[in-house]
Image (tube, rainbow, N blue to C red; front, side):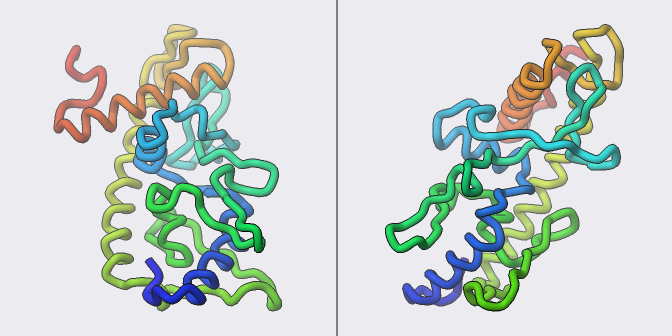
Length: 212
């Protein structure tokens, strides 16, 4: 999304994004981001994601472990940041996902809307800090619209999942899990996520609603 296609401008933007975002990992992704990357790489989503504790009021908090835990999903991290972060021989960081990267990553340093993380500004002496003015404004506006729709759908996916009966304990309203640990519950959730996106694209009802 950089406006200047010159190698120097691109290099500065990559260096700024790497220092401020990639080394911490993509903390905010939507279900659409996860599904898009999963499909493109022909991998089940649990091979490229990890969880982190979620606050009780977090709309992306996925209920697991029989309703006893709430977690977020994010792209997996490696020893030096996002698992998709690549380093050139000169040390410059690049995203291995390219245009498959989450929208919040591609739009850095812009804030896409409510709920999106703000860019982190590092202390002086690091790479030049990119600003929203460095981005192609038309592409940025399109990204913001797409992100808002994806975010709202992500909120609804999580909300509907958390309202499903708990199959492991026969309860209700605590999320459906097929096993006794978080890994099992998260894999079940991600299968549900894939189903919801297939239904969204086909314009059909939400998974499970056809039987009601």
